[in-house]
Each structure stands twice: as C-alpha cells, then as structure tokens.
Amino acid sequence: MGELTDFDTMMRLHKDDQETLERLHQRLISELVINASKDTKRRLQGLPLWLGMELRRACNPTARFVKLSGMMQEDFLESNYCLNSPLESIAEKRR
Image 1 (tube, helix red, strand yellow):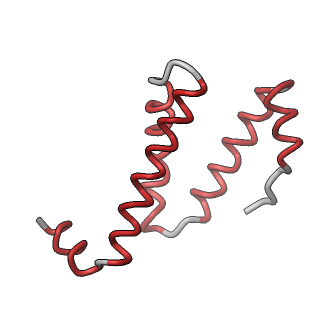
Image 2 (image 1 turned 180 degrees about the horizontal axis):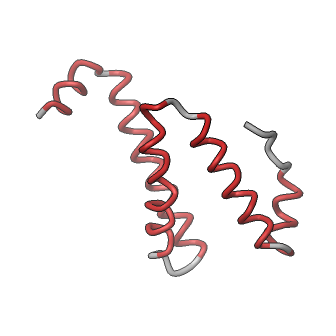
C-alpha cells in the first residue's frame, strides 16, 4: 500500500481541493481492497458504500462525527468481547 499523505497536506486538500482529496480517498480504498486477503476482500468492497450511505443520513459534520464514532465504538466493543470471550462469541454467532 502506498504511503499515507501527511495530515497538513490532507487538511489543505480538504479546504482547497476537495476533488483531489476524494481521488486520494478512493485510491487508498482501492489499494486496501486489492491487497486484502480473499476472505476479507468482499466485505471491504461493500464497506465504503455502506459507510457513505450511513454518513449521508447525518445532516452536518458533527452528526457525521457522532455517527462514525458510535459505529467505531460498537465494533470495538464487539471485538473486545470476541477477544475476551472467544467460546461464547463463537456460540452466539452459530445461533
């Protein structure tokens, strides 16, 4: 995967050149999907579409931040549960 652009450059693109920032965003997503294992590739391909739909429902940047933070917290809690209770986690997924 290519090297990430530094924060200051991305902030400048955010303010002055949204199209270039979006192209960078799409390129990084594409590289991530291309380099993913076969098992995760399909899920990763659908993730940007799902995230985009969820974030478009939010009416302003603060609402998008809150939505994204909540989604990340849910994923973290689920991952934490799976790591700390693997047998219970597997049993629940089979139900």
